[in-house]
Length: 206
Image (tube, rainbow, N blue to C red; front, side):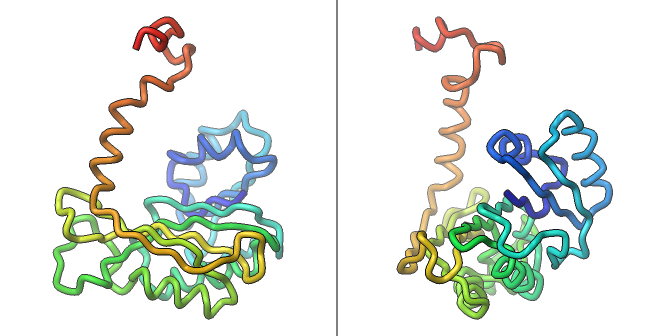
């Protein structure tokens, strides 16, 4: 697995338990140092500082799953396109990438309280995939914040052309994403491990 821009490891903590080998790449030396310290006990993680747009530490055709959440929403179109081009080299034949990026480019007159990249849109990301020989197979446009009328973010799933996951492009609009996230957070305790302070009996009663 590959995680692009992990920050301080908010999502890395979930990925590391799922991967035989996890490569994390971040522009920030501070973030990589923090992850080294946080995941010191994990022997399956390798840590790399990059230039913010390339994946030189990743071998060709070596990645089964690439992931980035709540980081690439801030990068402009040239950076996102560069990462997509790198993924076309790094993904295995049946590899898949999930990228969370901006869709604010589809709303040129919208306010931007969450500092989304103004030059990026779902359409532009899909075109970048096609230009790199990848297939953009799924995109979900979501709101981020109280204004559900502006679908400022996009989740894009891409894969190499001809992979087992290749197929027609599917796109949905989800203005209820924030409400769905809040609902999931409210129910999280139902699925917590007993070792985290929730006993099996409590789960059974609820």
